[in-house]
Length: 116
Image (cartoon, rainbow, N blue to C red; front, side, top):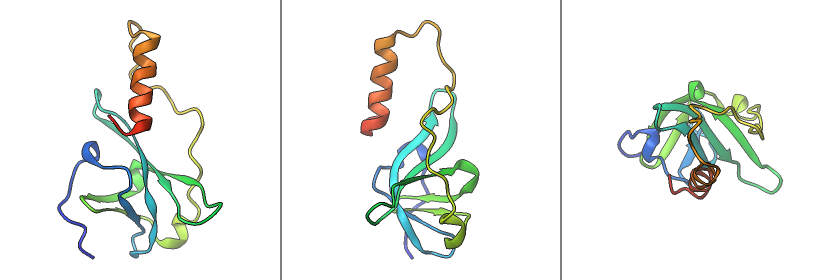
């Protein structure tokens, strides 16, 4: 399996395939959860294939390798089936009290739309 060169989570793109440690395709990257200002990588939200399969969250500790064309988790296929749905209320990292509501909304939109 040629996944290309190793890359940072900072340049990981939406749509990149995600694989279990035993090379089973489990979905694709939907969203990267990170605070780039603090250089904190929290994990990825994975869109699983198939009707009604939804999204799951892989914590940074569950991620083994990040490459140009694929992410390989440390979990085997069975363990990947037990990944949980992402939380609706993720923790706020590094909130700036001087930040305006408009700035916060713009940053949130940029992250959701993949423009981060």
